Image (tube, rainbow, N blue to C red; front, side, top):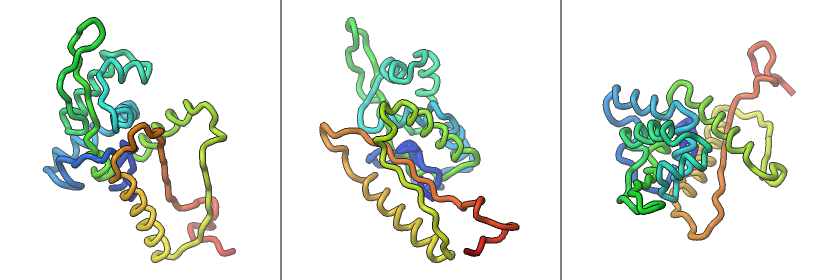
Length: 200
């Protein structure tokens, strides 16, 4: 329900930028949707998309940021370009005059439908990125237990989705600090008894 590169969300994903996507959710042939799903079934690719959200980066810069071999990263970058999740920008001069291609995320993953295994990839990408935060205690975090009927659950999901769509549609603030938001709404299995909702 909540989209991945922005994460890459796992419902409508979002690893997400503010650019128009080449396709909408569920569009294209079944083979194209399967190819998109395979392209997003990688924690590394989700992290690449997030790096290129509002800043075009070369393969060398992406590899350095992720502490990966540039040749390995290039394979993933090419896959993302082939599926329209990244777009190549005009060639620029790099170190020692070399010609380098910068890549920018298109936002397509934000609008791509979920696929089996995508949620696990998004969670793993979040954990890898959160492990890099210098002071985790400064992160704003909340955990809330609710008991809702179907209408209440739908209302909550729609209101949260509306907030995410609002901010996802805003252009990046020049000079702003990059932030990451990971949202999960799930059934609380520890509060169930015998497969039925527990009664307080």
